[in-house]
Image 1 (tube, rainbow, N blue to C red):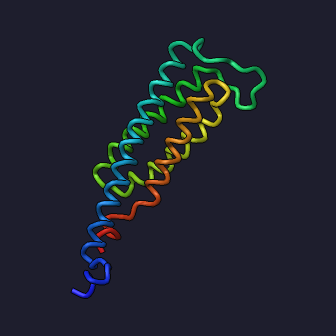
Image 2: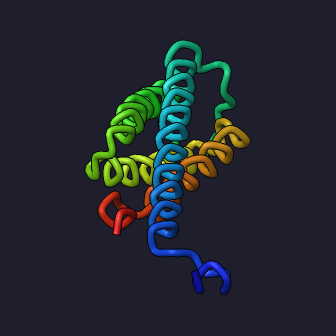
Image 3: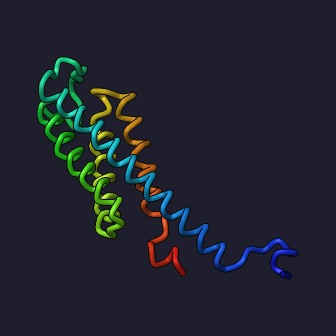
Length: 145
């Protein structure tokens, strides 16, 4: 009773709050991975099918053929979508793979900046939030204790 009077929460209430927070962050990361992956797939398909949509920049340090960029975004998008779906199972490997793939997508979108700058910045921010959520959310075993 003293804990209720002083305003402190019991250990069970803290564990419940921690578990809800962990599940929420992982759900956020999973949804954002799926959304970001689908967006990268669409970006890749666009670059493969019709690369005249994008502005070609002369003398860019990371200059690839836009079709090559399309395949890079398509493959990474499919992989991050699958990892995002696997995250809903609670698999630890999905968190690790999610961080690695989101990191690769940040690098790929950074190198893609001259071709589609605003879109690339949006996807860099989205994948940065995914990495944050995957790294900050406690593991299931930590959330229960």
